[in-house]
Image (cartoon, rainbow, N blue to C red; front, side, top):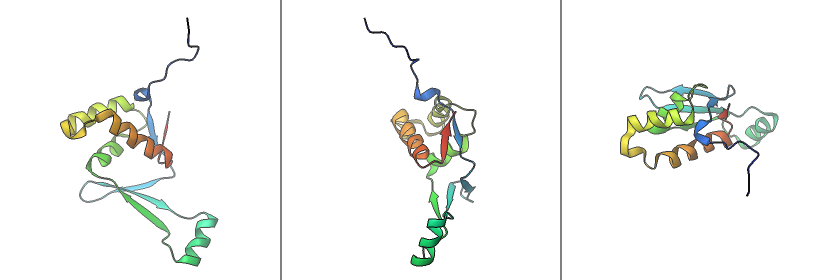
Length: 115
């Protein structure tokens, strides 16, 4: 009989926390805009050579903004999922797949990390 030595991890138990390096604003319409500053040495050189902007902005939609506002370093992914379900009802479905994909995008771009 096969026995696992590692404790099973559940993605829904993870607690997301926003990166302190990420800047963001809440626009007048209540939606979130994430601002990424391009200020590494390489990016500054590229900006001078190719006249690219010093920052870029990512506008979140209504559901993404709602999730972003609830990422506080205390709520688990499961707790956030329940808030999303209560707010968006059927529009959030398939809830867990969409939420986990969104969280993975945020993590892969270093906008959040998990505790």
